[in-house]
Length: 633
Image (cartoon, rainbow, N blue to C red; front, side, top):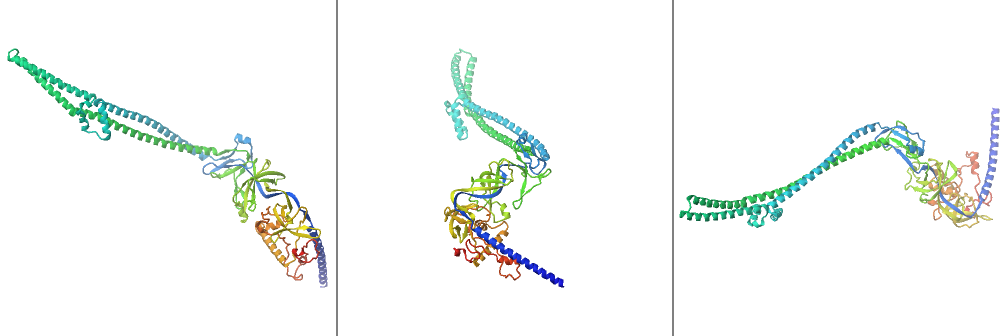
């Protein structure tokens, strides 16, 4: 028991000694820290004129400007028979010699090609036959039409030959307006002078026969009279008298026959012959019309048959050429120099996974298999924050550094800016809006696609402007202030600022060249209101740091203006305000929750932490009065 008490007493003494040592060490550390802060606060920077570069700095990766994509051109699904290994570098010699980089299965394509070749030959024979049939039909139609035209011509000639040209033309002219009747032919005989041709000749012959018969009758009658007188005187015989009587009777009969013949001609023969010749002419014209119509119909049928045969031939030819193209597409030769890269697949969240491109894998039609990017012409694929996208424009110059070669700098310019945010950024943070931007890269033949790079897009070049370090400026109540160092104290002064980069900010009003400003503006948090504001700022900062994707957009201006590393480079707005109207009041050091006395179960470290001195303005006493910054001045 005595040994136990002795051990406990010894243990208590050791603990007290350790506590005293820790307390003395913390007191010394607080004094040295306070002295260091005072000395740091007194660091100044003279207001000078200088040239400023306003830029946007973003990260990105190299990608080829031109890339040949190899896809499966074989219809349906096919299988990879042979493929060049990924990463193989194709040279111009490979392109010239036609090096095979991909071969697909063509067994089914060859069978289809053989069947299609037979169908193509049949269609070509049908098309040739139809074309020749059309030529034959055209020749036959020409012959039939010519025969029909000749029949019409000969019919008109026969009509004119029989009726005469004038009578035939009159009859044809009247028949064009109305059908011909018997009256049309009868009236031609009423005036024989209007006839012509064979009909007129026949009419004249019949008329001459009547006149001749009448003359012979008169002669026979006169002779008979003389013979009767001579017979009465017994100068002639009875037989001679009977002979003269017979001649007189014959002449009378001949005259009557001639008269009857002309009557038959006028009443029957002439109308019949005239009507026949006219009908033959009209029928010849109708036959010509039928020949023309038949020729058109037969030619149209021949043309349609040839058109169908030609369309079928063209279809079969197109199918044959398609199969030939597919057969040729199953063997892909090197199209251009470059490195062979197998297809990668975009996954959720913007990542890319490799696909199993290998021999034996089935690929679909139009499926991407590989690509051959050109390494001689590269771009930088970067993404610009939405607050900066309206400040960049196509054609702006850029400075580029590649992580693989940090000592080398490349030049370029903005080539393209996406009109809509990149959908890949929505996966990681829905509130983050990034715009894909392509920047050209001059030179860099030794670089390879996929390398990481940083792009500084030059927005503006300011010449001979007043500027101070960006950490010298603070926000208080919506105003931009800085502290000007004087011989007696630090003077708070309101200023008007312009554009800025990651190091300096342009001064428009409030400062003169040669004045010195404090590099680290003083921070005093000794009032309850300020302590509450500091606690609220700490809570907001903790919430921002715990949120996926990092601090919110409105958190970074305060950090930037208080000397912390900015999330991105943002110039100030034209009115001198930071984006979103944020103030840049200094953020206090996070304090532990108070309200407990040192003896209420607090650890020694916590008690000393609550007794840490607060930062004071330069020139104030170490235990100076706890007044605000405005009251100090």
